[in-house]
Length: 189
Image (cartoon, rainbow, N blue to C red; front, side):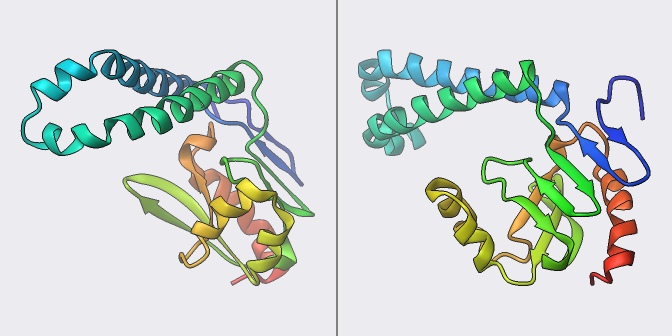
């Protein structure tokens, strides 16, 4: 691992931090969405007047997009900048299990005895580590309202709990390799 990685690895634990470059890039992209939406809101008459093709289809729902998009991407920008300045670990892997804080719908501690299987997959070109719990309902019940709703959307997926590459400053293959020592110990499929 290079010196720019903050991930800490010992014999019995791994603490993974999000990549600073990716976090900054996502912050900039999120801020750009806010800027474009604010610009569009101030130029709505001109946009509606010159609307053609797909813009003509989208023009009637632009007010809804602004009302939802500006606060959403604004909060994303603030959250990402906060995580850039004050990074918290995305993952902690140890004898107890995997403490997942990598996503907005982070589930917290996933004990080894709660895991049915773990695997690597790709979603829209991004590598992910997926976790399939033995029983997903207890994870839903442990979460607050917003997290529960976000997790519930993943309920029927092959891996309802996902850890994206952008949550790790090291390749996910290295994380999965470290996890394998516990998989072997706990006999996880």
